Image (cartoon, rainbow, N blue to C red):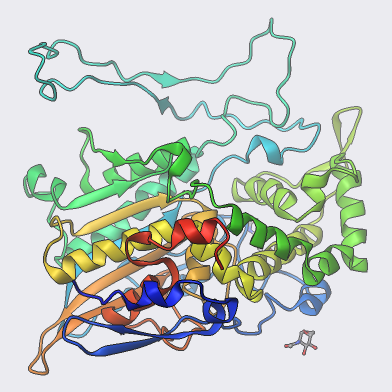
Length: 508
Ligand SMILES: *[C@@H]1O[C@H](CO)[C@@H](O)[C@H](O)[C@H]1NC(C)=O
Ligand SMILES: *[C@@H]1O[C@H](CO)[C@@H](O)[C@H](O)[C@H]1NC(C)=O
């Protein structure tokens, strides 16, 4: 056993002050104590989390909301439509003493239609997806069973969904019109997904020679990589493109997926205490105060008037999430901002201006920072609800370090903003933003060669750059001793996630 069991006993019956500010000592196999600070530390004070600056500001800090393209010179800048990720042009190759031995990454899916729940009451706008197919079919494996059945002739024809509107069906869906599913990764989002795979392969194969090559036998890479998705089909839509961008394979690749009700990646497992903590933040003074600020009331009045959203619609008025999703999805796809409807028809007048949209985007960023970083409770809320995934990651790292892993070099998780936000929260990112489309966090595990005994180190990249944490034990996450990161994870969620059920049930 690599770690002593002291941490979990330390947590037994602990008070909230322990949770919020403990320095825990963990002992590695070699007996050396690892002190790690499990406390919450406030993020940096920036315009993003400064309500005065948000309300009085203009633009959105140079963030991009209207195109997947970012000029090379500006790559690394926040782009909601297509967040920066690891690619060769910007990638910092580690020093020669460091040998890359394992990579695990998680990224949000790429750009999509809005969710139906984010549509305005009357949506005259169409989203059509006739330029792509959503392939859903099942295929019996020929060799998988011992039943002696011969399935070699039974090959499923690639069958795909084609959305259509029945002229006979008098019911009109709430939300959006058109042949897309709401949500669905758009054709442009599929392009971004494919390029994401191309870029990762260009770094981890071409540049580093870490991953096997496309030209090697499929057996060679298939046994060393794992892809994981959630049960929301948009992550699978992205996965197919990412995998092809990397390997150019057109034969089946398994996508690991947990049962919908307990999935740790989305995350979906029941965690009431986390929900209560997040609700508490939304009932708190700062949150209520931002919704009641004079400028915000005025903004809501204009948005409601143009969109037709009722002022008493709780969903739209509890946060800017819905308006943000509505407006940004349009802009990322080159669609115009909406104008006032008269009798359900677009008037072309009284439109949502770019200035109003930018205000919504600034408020959305502020809300994500508030929810996931600025409030002390955010750490406990995220550690509980994303703790199982964190423990899974810790288990993978530990398997490589201890040499009893399954030989996987590459674990690739395709997830949601709720997944990436919670991870950033657990890592206490210095500047929290709303993770945009494709937003990526990479954990690179290195073995250090050297006469000083070597050891294992982790580098964490967010948007392709080294992540900075406000927690002093993590700090600049560039070649952090793996013992430190594992002690931090163990302290928050328990080795093997053994603290998570208790935390979700309200043990503080
Ligand atoms: C917040 O922003 C306002 C306006 O830009 C500025 O005057 C104030 O100093 C900022 N507050 C902090 C804590 O940085
Ligand atoms: C995108 O937005 C920026 C900043 O608002 C603007 O300068 C640029 O012209 C826009 N690009 C497109 C394609 O609309």
